[in-house]
Every structure is written in structure tokens, then in C-alpha cells.
Amino acid sequence: MFNKKGIGIGNDDFKDVITQDCYFVDKSKFIEEILNDKAKIKLFCRPRRFGKTLNMSMLKYFFDIRNKIENRKLFSGLYIESSPVIEEQGKYPVIFITLKGLKVSTYTEMLKKVGGILAKEFNKFVHVREVLNQKELKDFDNIWLEKKEADFSRGLKDLSEFLKKYYDKKVIVLIDEYDTPLLTAHEFGYYNEALQFFKMFYGDVLKSNETLQMGVLTGIIRVAQAGIFSDLNNFYSNTILENEYSKYFGLLENEVEEILKYYEVEYKLDDVREWYNGYTFGNTQVYNPWSILHFVRVKELSPFWVNTSSNYLIREILKNSNQEVFKNLEKLFNKEELLTRVDSNVEVHTHLAENEIYSLMLYSGYLTLKEKITSDIYSIRIPNKEIMSFFHTTFISIGNYSAVSFYKK
Image (cartoon, rainbow, N blue to C red; front, side):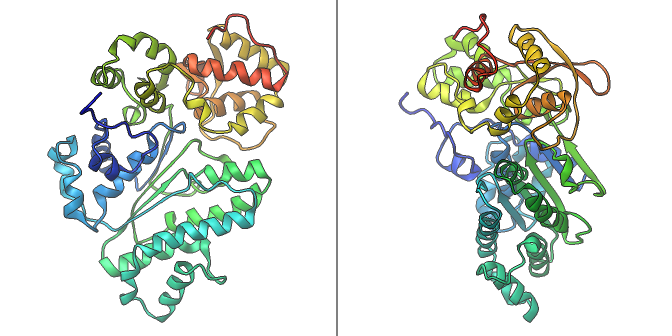
């Protein structure tokens, strides 16, 4: 594959993907739709490794007022370059943090790591200190230098105010994988403490913040207990249940065909479809992009996506599930569909009601939609062979259930 574009596995920085000549599927129309959508706060919930961070990075480079001339070049030849909304490029100060790496075992470690993330973001804007008064300088330096007296829960709100004062422009706030620290806190037993912290951390910058132009968040689930979004005005939540934005996370059939053809493995399309397709977001069928990239790299069919995390919460839920749940999962194994109510919010605790278990599995990418029956009742199924392999090995390791006979690698 000499002279082929690189395969940027694990590279979710838009600028690096473009400048290092990695294969890039043009999802820049996402920017146009974000701008045409007048909701001030937008939350996008998708399974992990479905392109959330890359999309957020693309938004950052598009809107960021810093280096706007250089950043404009990154969009050369993409859809957005010829869109009328290109006029919005480089117009706003942008705060962008990703919390996907915020996985620590204690609340104290969590606070320290949040402080480090904020300090790194503050360090990008040291120049704004020249317009701050004495009190603002103290607040800035407390977080920038990670001092003991720093109030990290106000960090995003404070930085947005400092940027507004310096640039005289409202601020765009991008928070990637907002729910990772909450799910991690649940795993290690400090969930209640983390929940109270993040209510303030997110709430201060998103609620009644006159310096905010727009906020965009991504995650896997909309956490019911968080209460972060309950009283937000002009808030829009987009999950796998909605058709809007459905083509911007994951890969479409024609996009996968083009990738396979480019890397000269188009003859494997049927096998690839069986292993990695099958997800339904809204009315759109999508492939798992993480597994597609790995496949074209090694040209072997394997469960790439399911091995990218500990799958802690899913495993814990299965360990604590009753026999009725396992009977229903057996039906799913046998390629039958299951009717269940799907909640838009997901409770984060071990002893979930039956429909909550399926909702969590659905949002996490272990199950997918077949069709909508009523306003909240859906038929669901296992999406593909990769996920079949996960359940097969998981049931064996848990010991509550034997492997079903139909499964074949």
C-alpha cells in the first residue's frame, strides 16, 4: 500500500489527521448543522470509539479565534469550505477539554487530575492575564498553577469570563466524554462525591452564563442522577434514538465501501458487514469506525472494538442480572428481537431494572435498535458478530451462563 494515506488509529486530533495525511471521512457538514441548530447547549450521546472526539476537535479548529488563518487551511477541499457558514470560521474563543482519560480510583486523585486538565487549558490563554484585575489574576493563577486554594469546580466558568473580557467575544465550550469521570467514580466507589463536584463544574459554565455562545458536550449516556441539564433553557439532547445528526457518528455504507476500495480489500465487504455493521442510529445504519480502521490495517476480522475498555459496568450488570434477563439475552443470541422500553436517561447503579439494563447496553453499543414500536417501546437486537463474540466470552467468564450452541467464530 505504498503512497496510500495513513490509517490514523487512535489519532482523534483533527489537525493531526489532516496535516499527517491520514485517511479522513469528510463529516464537516456536522459543523453546518451545529450552526443551523439554534439550541445553545447540545449533548451528543454515542458509544465509545464512534468519532465523538474527532468531531469535537474539528469543531475546535473551525471556531477557534486563535490561528484562524492557519486553521482555515485544514478545511480545504472539505464540504464546509463551500458552505455559507464558513464565515463563522475563526470567530470565537474556544475552551476544549476531553475527560476520556479521567479514570482514577479515588476522589482525591480525580480532583488532582481535573486540576491538571484545567491548568493545561488555562496555560493556552496566559495572554489574557494582561486584561484581568487583581482578583481575576488571583483566580486565574490559582488554577493555572494548581494551587491548594484553587476552586476547580468554577474553572470553566472563570475561564469563559476571562476569555470574554479579553476577546470581547462570547465563548464556545466543548466538553468531550463528560460522563467518563462519573462512570469511573461509580466503578471505584466515590460516585456521590464526584456527582456533586460535576454538578457545579458543568452547571456553572452552562447555566445562566452570559459569556457563553454555545456549549457542545459528548458522552455515552445521559446520566439521570446528574441533574446537570434539568433546568437548562434552550438545551438539546441527541442520542442514538434520534435521526437528526445520525450520519455524523460512525461510518455509512458508502463510506465503508470507499475505504475498503481505497485500501484494496473491497472483496471483504460482505465479511466486514457481518462483523462491524448493524448499528442503527435513528433511521441510519452505521458501521463501527474503530473496527473498520483496524481491519484495513491488518486485514483480519477480529473483535477490535470490544477489547478497547474493561466493559466494567456491563459486566457488573450481567453478574447481578436475574434469570429472566439471561433468557432474553439467549433470545438475542438466537437472532431474535426483544421488545423493551428505552429510557432517554440512564441510572448509574448496579441493580438496574430490566428495561434499564437494555437501555444501558443500547447506548453503550452492545445492542442496537431494530425499529420503534411506540413512543418509548423499541425492538432491539445484537448488532453484529463482533458483539456476539463479546457476549460469548463474557458469559463464560461470569460463569452464570454457558455459551450458546449457535455461536461460531
